[in-house]
Image (cartoon, rainbow, N blue to C red; front, side):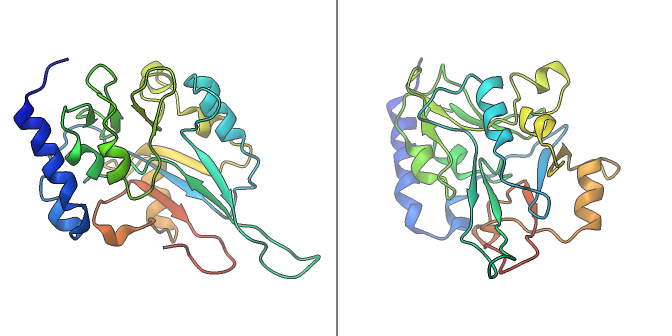
Length: 223
């Protein structure tokens, strides 16, 4: 593991800019070639069963006490007996302009050029937690065994490597999750986004998240 003191301090300087507008912090943007994977979470279909959470944990050997994915249930909407709940997927957004990549002093947090997926190289990570602080969605954590940053990687090193869908997509009983290449207009995920009303959480920050959502039919859209 080798990195210069100058590069480390440069990362610290970027982190110090966290109070500035997102566009200022994210001025450094890298071009990506190849496939650009993204996901749609259909909030009208999600029933909050958390099968996706369990499948993620099993497929990626996520230890107890931490999680790459969680489903947040809203307060009840409506009056008894006609009560409804909104289920919100909380996980990495795999942003095209990822602040976690911009602040990493060692290059451990990176955007995979072949897939557009944001990932972490544990061999380079020093556990400084800059990426955890920089993430507007607070979806990263320090792995209790490796002591390095960890998060959802769309099963890049497990299921995708085998030519399969992410574990959460495969297991969802209501087909609330759709995954695929956003740059292919003929892909299922691209057609879904083109044909449905969707939104992206905290889009105003300018990070260009690749997790789209079909909004819950009741109540306000969470921005």
